[in-house]
Image (cartoon, helix red, strand yellow):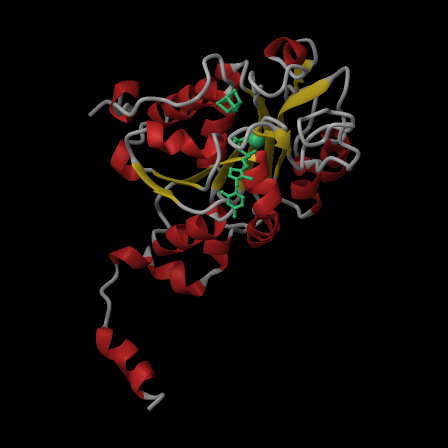
Length: 287
Ligand SMILES: Cc1ncc(C[n+]2csc(CCOP(=O)(O)OP(=O)(O)O)c2C)c(N)n1
Ligand code: SF4
Ligand SMILES: [Mg+2]
């Protein structure tokens, strides 16, 4: 049976501002799943709280919407229980790198086979435009009235420092390229990060679609070799007049959490028979 984009459509009304960079990301996620011939019941999306985290509300498929910053631990548990299902985490920069920053570090270290898509708009969009961990220095908000003076967090450099095996950056203004990145991230065996440059048209009048269009360029294999970790770290620090997008690093050699785990060798836990008497024995041993 062929899968169509409409299969992922639901009739929830979308609460994002007109022109928001979240719309093309939603389209790219759906298109990537269609291109991979995945059907709604075969995919699991997990999110926390924020504008980005609303994305699964606007899709027809399995999803779990939990607490701010806590999507990754939930997704980890889901993936361990059902280690054959594609699990995709959707979050904002605040959700993923601020409140959920600790989980981000350890999900990368664990190298669980999850795809993390971060809508990086450099602000807390849902709570009306305060600075987030990725906000550029000098950016003025209603709270940071003298401009942000903290060092921005670079998610790509951090993921690479922990040797994340798949690290990519997309741009919401280039849906075709973003779709291809998401597709490859989903099929990759191991933790994959796709950080997406996403203009927030309501609370950031500096980093507009045009601002990014004037700066982004694609890392093309042939000109750029994504198997070199040190080169990737160096490339991840490029920001300003030129901003690279594409796959910064890909390392298929690193074994995933699932490949390491002896418990998962016999197949997904959800497909196995649960012998309650063994659990009961453990409980009884406490009395
Ligand atoms: C534990 C907790 N802390 C703070 C909040 C308030 N809050 C909700 S969304 C959000 C930040 C949203 O920013 P981001 O994750 O970047 O998503 P965006 O809305 O920009 O897509 C915050 C601080 C919350 N809901 N729960
Ligand atoms: S506040 Fe910003 S991120 Fe949120 S929906 Fe509006 S434009 Fe998009
Ligand atoms: Mg944000």
